[in-house]
Structures are given as C-alpha cells and as structure tokens.
Length: 356
Length: 191
Image (cartoon, rainbow over all chains, first blue to last red; front, side, top):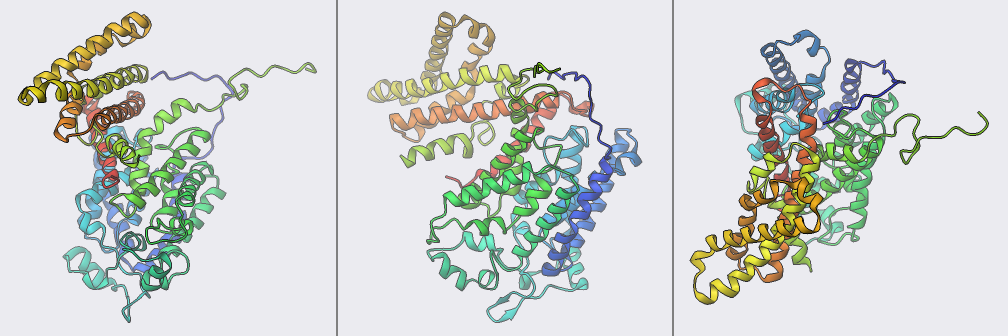
C-alpha cells in the first residue's frame, strides 16, 4: 500500500481519543437507562462483566507486547468495546457469555491486528457474531420487557438477587423470556399484519414497533443526536444506513399482507437499528474514510440488514451487515478518495481567477 | 427467472466458494497482496471458470454419459480445465499482450484452482441443466472475484498495521479470512 505524503496545510484536531471515547460512553446512558427499566438489572451486570474482562485482556496483551499499559488503558477504547457488547447481549445471559465475547473481541479482533486504530473489524461486533454462532440458544433468550401483559400475566424482571443467581449460578430463566418483536414478526405465519399486530402482545401493547423496543431505539437515537451535536462523527454513515434501510423497506412494502416484510417504522424502531446506526456504524477505525465513502458504507449496511432480516435465518443482522461492510471498507476507500485541498471536484487543480 | 436469480445469490453469497466452501484458497491467499493483481486474477478466473463450467457440462453430457464413462469425470474435467486455461492463455497472448504480461504466471496457475474443478463436479452432482450449470459457474466466479478483490484491498491496509510478529503475513491473513467467513454465515437461509 502506497502511503502518500501530504503537503501542508495540515488540519490538527484538538480532540484526544480519550475525549471521543468518553463522549460515546456518555451517549450510551439514555439507552442503558431505558434498557434497564424494561429488562432489569441484567444489562448493567453484562456491562460490568464485559468491562472487567476487557480491561484485564487489554492490560495482559499490552504487557505481553511490552507497550505502556496505563497510556493505552486511559484512552477508554477497550471500555467502549465492552460497553457496546454489554448493551448488545441479552440481559441475564450467563456470565461466561460476556467473558468469552469480550475476550475474543479484545484479543483477536483488536490486538492481533496491532490494537487501537489498526483493527479492520469492529471488535464488539466480532464478539457478538462469535457468540451468536457459537451459542445461539443463550443469545436468543431475551427477557419479556417488564409491564408486557402476556395471557393475562404481567411480565416482571427479576430483582438483583435473582438476577445474580441466574447470571452466575445458572438458574433457569424460563419464566421471564419472550420473543423479541423482530423474532415474533419473523414467525408470523399467514396472518395479515393488521391481525397479527392485534393478536400479538408485543405489538398490541406497543405504539409503533413493539412494546419496549421502540423506546430503547428512541433512547439510542437521542444518544446518537448528542454525539452528532458534539461533532464526534459526521452525519453521513448513520444517515446512509437509516436511508438504505428505509428505502429497502419502502420498495418491499406491500401494504401489510401475510408475507409482508414489515413497514418502515417497524424496521427503524426495532432490534438494533438505532444502536447500530449511531454507535456501531460510526466507528471511525473500521468504517470508510471519506464522507462519500461513509454514505455508501452506511447505505449498504442498511441494505444487508433488511435482506437478512427479511429473508435470512437470523431475526436481526446488524452485526453481520457491519462486519461485511468492514470487509469492504478499504475497497470503498480506494474508489472514494477525499478531495485534496486546492483541487476541484474532478481532481483538477483550481486555477486562479483573473482578478488575482 | 426467479430460480436463476436464486442460483446467482446462492453461488455468490450464501455458498461462496472461498468463504463458505473453502475452495480456491491458494489464489485467495497467494494473489491478494495487491489490489491490481487481484483484479487481474479475478477477471481471468471469471473467464476460465465460466468457460470450464460450460465445456465440462458438454463433455459430461455428450461424451461421458453416452459412453457410460461417468467414473472418469474427475480426470476428464481436469483435462478440460487444463485445455480451457491453455486456450485462454493463447487467446490473451494474441489479443492483449499487455494483459498477458500483467497476469504472468497466475494465468497457468488457474489450472490448479480447486474452485474451478469444484464448480464442474458440483454441476454434475446436482444434475443441473446447461443454462443452470453455466450460470452457476459464472456466479461462483463472481463470488470468488468479490471476496478476492475486497480481501486484497483489506490486506494492503494490513501490511502497514502494527501486527505482532508471530502473526505477520499469511497468519493474520488466515485469521482475517476466518473472521470474514463468520460474517458470511449471516447470509445462511437467504436461498
């Protein structure tokens, strides 16, 4: 790979990695609060286990490679990976799930490539996909959001003591699980969407896209808007992804027949859509570099997300879409170089006008 | 019409020759160091694979089956592929000496690409019709080209990464291919 030597002027960003990572951590708070209020303490336990594992693995690898441990731990990047993975895992998953996923993410997806800034794949999504393929049973056991009424009983999430027993001692959680809206929708057999919505508790108690999940997505959208406002990332990748998903849903919308693939609002507010659009797709390391490249990168993730959601085996596909496009990002970069300073759009040098 | 689209999606994404069936790994690891060579190799392989799928179908249904010699199909297909590659080589040499020089030794090496033989054998094993067989060969070649080209762009970036010493070179390439294969598992069930 030819590394070009750029001449001045060089733009200098006053922001440190540490500041950016702190902003991302702050922006996950609304999502975390809503997830906790619907699914109980489990998400927080996940995040704690993942964070401890991530920091331990990061420190161990840095020590093995004889790099300054404190310097790299203080950039919070390992912590962000852990928090993102912890948010994505089902609450009250057994403790070894978070440990395995985080260790794989940090050691293999990040440090084998040389650590922060060199990893071609998003570590959190690698951890998630490894877990999803290796332990599909544990990864699909989502709790019923608290307050959801199924067959006359109101779902409640277990308290702290029960939660700890489920996570660490492996007590069964059968009484608490329910299909997520995406899962339920995928298994709609032969009902018109309207009737299906009326008969399914996840939808008839929800407002737009399934009880609980719509609010989780709105909370992540809020966090994402905060990051956009602080200019942590540009709008291109998230808009590209949401746009790609919206267009696919629009073109494939058939008015709600029994074979429907879901409406636009259903796709935008279910599963990991907003979480992905603002916290995963925007990763500066693994996405395309130029703004035009990011737009393409995001849009293709949206398209793959819709394809797998509608016709694939998995109910949600954010992680697969992101990894596939991580794979394609260097190629996209190759054909969408950013415009260099002083050059016109087509790469020609801007000529001075006659006045000067 | 729809079944032809399904054959294409199946051969390009779901049953991708490199990342789902693990065929053709030698050129995948060997020619992916630079994007330009990868593109050249991808187009040559696409040409050969499609042509080999067509001619091996013809050899199978016009010669082997009427004579009852199906048990010879592996060796016959290898011969067919070698002939097709040699033909392609001569053709490119005459029509475009520049492309011939760029591809260099990779052109005859396509003979040993197991994905080409894989296409021919799978076509007879699944009793595909003439059109399906050639479309499958073309789709498989497109899938091979897609991952080869994307992988080479990624490897150019890896070559400047601070990879730990024991993992440099082919090792990190293998790990990357493994992670990619994980991502391609997401397409399961599309067809």
